[in-house]
Length: 160
Image 1 (cartoon, rainbow, N blue to C red):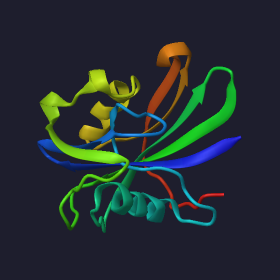
Image 2 (image 1 turned 180 degrees about the horizontal axis):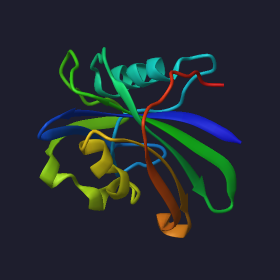
Image 3 (image 1 turned 90 degrees about the vertical axis):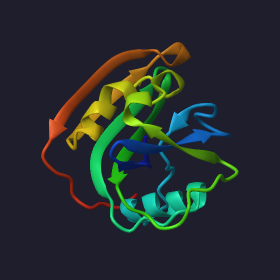
């Protein structure tokens, strides 16, 4: 079973906008903004909606830079995360019930307080490369297996 999700990060060199997840899956970690794609919703539209809901900002132009499948040992569900990058938005990043946004200099990204896979794909993200991969997590979010490769491009797609 596959669940389609989005993850979006604003990158205005030399800073990135991340959010502290305040509740639910991943609470207590810095992350990009995003979430579930609704049935029939275009993935890019879901990413823009999540930015509005979680950070109070409007993003017009974004590019898909990655697709990563996340699996957790003992759980048959695969989380397919479509990763987007944008360098422009309107509005002021504002704290929501779910996320507390904060700007980080690229040299000060808080990897120790993020998902353990982020340190592997974030350098590709920051260098403007596109990628796909797979991470299998075990107990205590230890990475048991990982695959990460560079790709050329992605097509526009819809949720189930």
